[in-house]
Length: 280
Image (cartoon, rainbow, N blue to C red; front, side):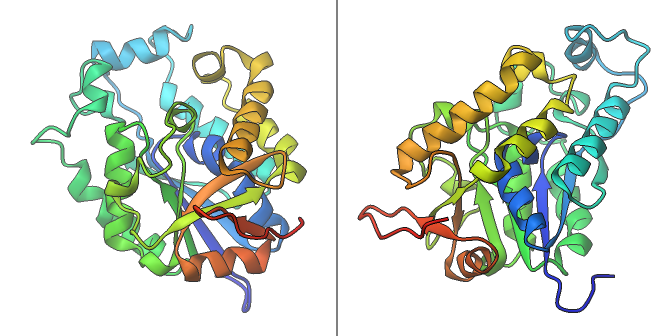
């Protein structure tokens, strides 16, 4: 039970690491301001007999076939959430796309198979978690990874638009100059970009990202480069949005969700015409 007067934020992450890589700074700031913040990750189930493509995703990281790769990643996620000061994460029992019949990297960025039940099951699994959240954070699905698309669509179907904030999926967003590239997946047209100064929590985000040891080589080129690349991405977002701050994360939010964010931390909005920012 949440204490009276304490607001709750729920981040809906497709995979074990997406919320931290994309919106870890916003989540850390909310937690610092007294919010109860929790990450729900959609595709986390272990599979006893993975297909060759699914098995390759752990073999190419130096993990033997007898390792429960997803159990290892769930443990990494618990450690990462603790670094950010969040509540214990929730892991939903859906398998990742390579365990659902997608047999190549190319298929991960194509429309879902007709027999893939994840799109029908995920809204039901999320419903009971979403109904009590004051603020919901979810991916825009920039990059078109099908698990991100399914997640964005499920949140759009189940979460009130007025309470939903859409993050820019990293690392895909770093290669997507169009800020509206995820708008067809769930976010409403009345949303606008909002920048959040994450300079004070950038070290916390980097420390949380370092917990995903199985992903650091694939995502960043190794653990030594993770902090550098996260800092560079936050700096690039600040430059792209002409923010007043050196390091920012960018989300899209409607008026009500933006007010909730502004009540907990000082933000500035970037529209086509630059509006005065608030010094954080």
